[in-house]
Length: 378
Ligand code: CXF
Ligand code: ZN
Image (cartoon, rainbow, N blue to C red; front, side):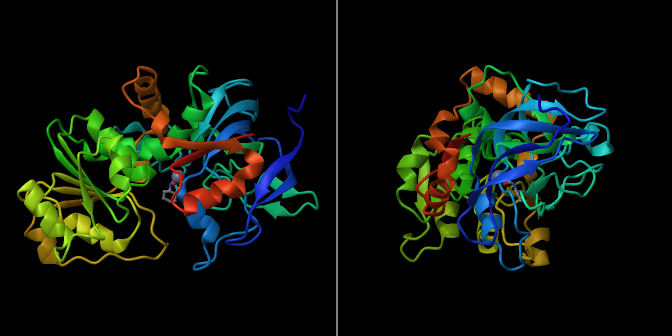
């Protein structure tokens, strides 16, 4: 019986930017009111974990427990929590969904205003940590999830209860990457049947956009990447055409795509997190109705600059998409049902599975571009 007591367990702690994680014994405090303590079943790595692990400028918060793509089982709940109970299978999700504010009640937004999303080192409701090391020093949270730990505490606004029959090594992908990419095509862009889509960057997010665009009935899905191996990989995700941006002769990518699409793609997705690629994507979408969706996570402080004429005279839209526009509590069950009905295929994202203690190997694979998703079993 652990309810109400601190739990001692293993976590992979990042002590300093860019250094290998260290398996440590840590203490996880019981959940406060509105919070839930969960035992992580499995967690996968998302490139945002690497981005914040590497972060030197501006400096990140360390020591920190990273990880935000996971599935777990509720161990205990704090006061005022009735939405889930002990034993429920849940996804912790970095984007809060309070269900009550104007934005959560609107179909048009997934950006909660009661608990605004931010990259904070704390819990969302109390600006404090539930983690300490055995000396009593505070360990920081990450994206309100911190799943690189056998136990973590998550706000109820960041929890979605799921069908316990879904295999955990697939369910965890919906906690970030798959939902972000599929959602960007489905919810943010609202890709229509017969559309032409161009995807810049065929990592897991770009490939999830392809999967989403395929589900929406897009007739052409153009993948743009520097790595020629991505074409064969992309085909499995519905990519119909490939542009090798490192080898277009002396033609700019913009010209190649303009020619391929006779005037530009209906929807362009930036899935890398590079300002120059946002400009390239915007240039490749069709005047009048083209939409460019920004999904990539750039360094904090990075800027975009557009000629006002290029906005005014083109009639194009530029949109940001956090978590693919997906509303965690209401849209995740829809996506999971489409997975269970075998419409949405996520198996092909899982390129590796290993034990939690091998987490540094999983980091290396993702950094080297050798994995899409590596699932770690606790
Ligand atoms: C990202 C979204 C933008 C801020 C950092 C985290 N989400 C998930 O990887
Ligand atoms: Zn992520």
